[in-house]
Length: 131
Image 1 (cartoon, rainbow, N blue to C red):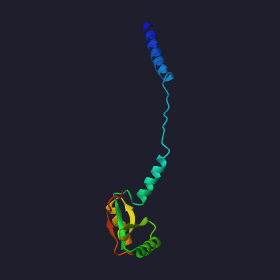
Image 2 (tube, rainbow, N blue to C red; image 1 turned 30 degrees about the vertical axis):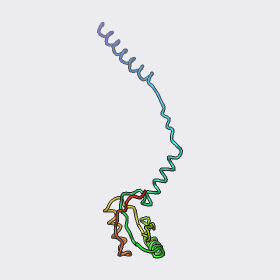
Image 3 (cartoon, helix red, strand yellow; image 1 turned 135 degrees about the vertical axis):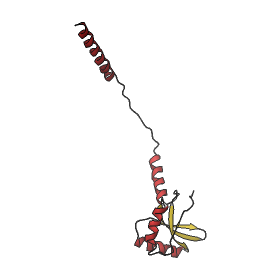
Image 4 (tube, rainbow, N blue to C red; image 1 turned 90 degrees about the horizontal axis):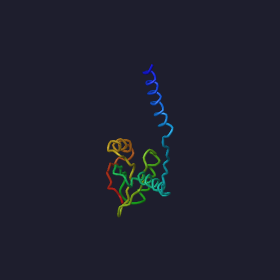
């Protein structure tokens, strides 16, 4: 009988110990103070990456020369393809028509195969990062 009392006392003590841990646990909250300009900066970064201004990736050049011809090339491209973004870049004294912002050479090669059907002089380049 004495062992039963000790066993019951041990079980009661054990349960009381765990019950007190659950009852007196701590609760907390975290407050994050964020500058209001962070969402704007993230949108700007997305825009610059889309326009291939921050990328270390690859692009396809369709044309290099005078502005009127660059405009007609980009218009023709946009009429045929909507998959990859296109832009006209200026490098004194000529204009370039660039297509895409590819993170890997393989992605650029796949796009080039499709584009060369209509732009036979297109080629892949890895532009230097612009500041």
